[in-house]
Amino acid sequence: MARTSSGPTRPGGMLQGLMLVALVILVCMNAFAWVRATRFQGEVNAKLAKLDTTIGQLSAKVQAPAAQAKPARRGPDPNKVHTVNTSGSPSKGLQNAPITIAEFSDFQ
Image 1 (cartoon, rainbow, N blue to C red):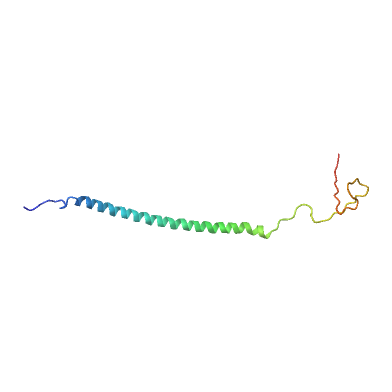
Image 2 (cartoon, helix red, strand yellow):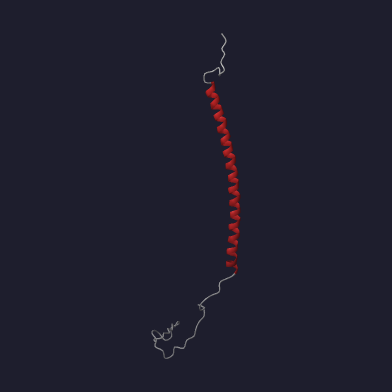
């Protein structure tokens, strides 16, 4: 007697076919995700390069004026020697000391 069945001849053939289809779908999904991730990584790298360039330009703009223009000195010159007449003023210490500190105050 001949066998007349419309299904697969092996008992697990239908299950194997479904597993093969699922495997193909899974491989396609992974390939699609890989392509998207690669494209996204390229976009991120381009944006980072642009950001790095912008930061470098801003840094150069900030540092250039600081290097060119020296700030003006404020206050008295610490290296200048001031001569003050202290004759007849109260004092402490030796009269012939190499350094004299003169203090001025107003008691009003």
